[in-house]
Image 1 (cartoon, rainbow, N blue to C red):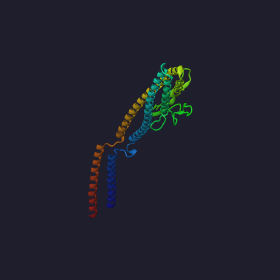
Image 2: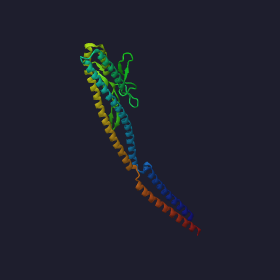
Image 3: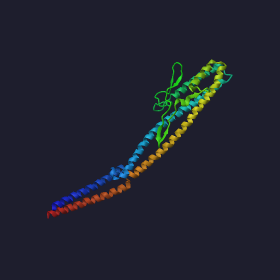
Image 4: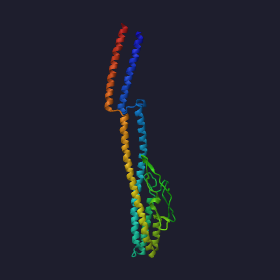
Length: 306
């Protein structure tokens, strides 16, 4: 009976001390990681909520990447549009000068040369790329938005008709740019379709022809350039509203991430002060249990020896 009771005593004491040590180690781990849940069974409700928070955070990270890519494209597009307004304004000044009756044919020919340069620069902007190398005005197409015939110089849009929207959170989407036709296409009075590149080329050719016809072409070109300038500035306004909306959604997403972090801390975080106090209490109990075990073990041994 003595051997059986002593064996049970040792086994029970070892189990109790082992459990105390495990709890102390768990508290030490909580202090190190800042998390109080080691497994879902520790707090099933909190664990389920933490999984939901993790899912929200993953979705938010995807929305953040989409927003950053959209912002990148919108900024590059805005810069290109700003340069276009300068070039179109300059083209209008040249057309106004060419329409003046006192302007000579030689001067109009010189103006035509400058218009050719402006057209080439506009095409360069139309085929511009963003930081990732994607076409700014080609929609979803890979490569340039406009293909220029090496012989005739005619520019043809080779991009897609639309640009896919991207999700930026809370079920909201944004179009991260414009297609070429949205910016450069023009409709003549008779309903025929053209674009600013073709109109500039036609104006340049007319100015080189000289005479009254060149002056008349310049006056007609003023109206075309006014329309083109209006389309570009309207695109800038729309782009600005998109960038403002993107910024608002980014701020809301940042606030939401802060909420997730706070809730995660409440649901699964280990309060350092409370955890440290519990650890100190646990260590005190463990030390007392170990001391008690030693005393009782010695007493049992003494009884057996007697």
